[in-house]
Image 1 (cartoon, rainbow, N blue to C red):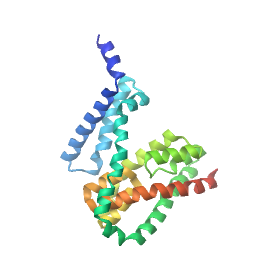
Image 2: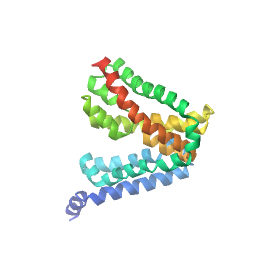
Image 3: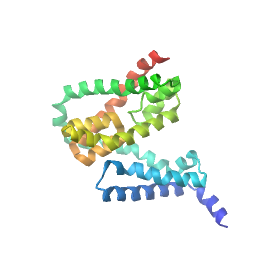
Length: 235
């Protein structure tokens, strides 16, 4: 009876959507109690809660994603909503267009080339290099770039998630240690760690979140232009 009930529940998309939401609520509560310590990032904690459950139950990623994809869908409206703080801070952004352009160009080139060069030096095959190159953009863009250039989209998404989590954990403490202002901190977070870095930047100040959102969007475009040229040197 119990086994039959589990088979029924496991096939229901609502199960994994609920599991994802419960895991995040628990993780966010822990993060708050830890005073938002970088090592207690909600995404890291929620992942740590969900992965053992998937392993124990033998649930494939495809089955899990079919249930939790509504959360993935909400990323679209969330990104569009970044236009609101951008509009509210448009005067501040307008005065920083030149530094934004310079930081974007240097940051995008370094983010892509450093990962590819390190992978190449470690003897990684071409498919791995292609998946590494767009690690600092959102998963949708990274998977598209990897697919078009002959890489593995799912691996690119994995690198994107790892980059976002790592960046979300270390960027703000690093920027505070360097005494950087909110604009520079936010821009660095959005450029290096896409959506996760942007979420962390909004926890700092709305202004930091605004610059993070700008960096995340522009870096997606810049990376799509840079990576095809960069990867030719390693093909």
